[in-house]
Length: 269
Image (cartoon, rainbow, N blue to C red):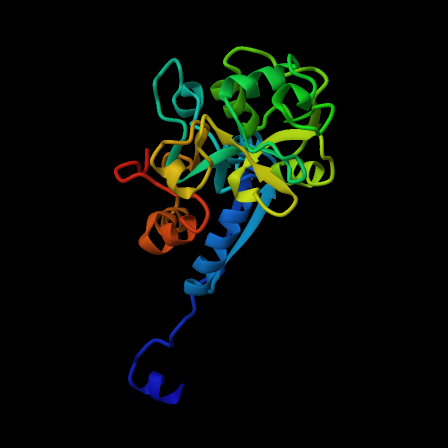
């Protein structure tokens, strides 16, 4: 201290602590926690707070100032991105990963492949017994997601195509809950983020294609969706730095452990 003072040099200071609040998609939580750990190892003064409330609620939290970044597992709707009257930008985003929504059954069910048409008929309630599909698993138990879930929205858009999921479906609040239920019920079928695939369940090939990093990244798997980090149009420096990290080679190496990487040229909007 004496030497610094005598030479007129300022004392070294540590960066002020930073808290980044991330709110939104339950499906994106595992990936963002991995990215946050890696980021904090490089920026020790940055901590993260996570709120798994769903994509829609994450956007609302961002708008109200209760989050710094919204985790959104679908493309933004036009009226979310722009003001309909003035065309002023309301939200910006960066694409960090591509996810496959896997159709899954209990691992004790021998069925391992379906067509998209068959999946739609099952979730409509038009097919109600596994015997119709050559499986001995008995009555089909349809598992779906709650209103406001981006996973459900994408599933209904790409699979149901205007048809309604049966009212007999059992509703679950997250991909994790879908996985846990199906792993203990042999007759169940549901859909979840491929990041939650694991013991007790089996992903089905759809029209001959299994969900994995490569088939999602190259577009061969038919049910894919983006993982977006969504911010206000003029984010602060810390938010910008974290988004850039998620798109960096280091961040994308973490993404590609499980998911398809962000396509070149699809960055911030």
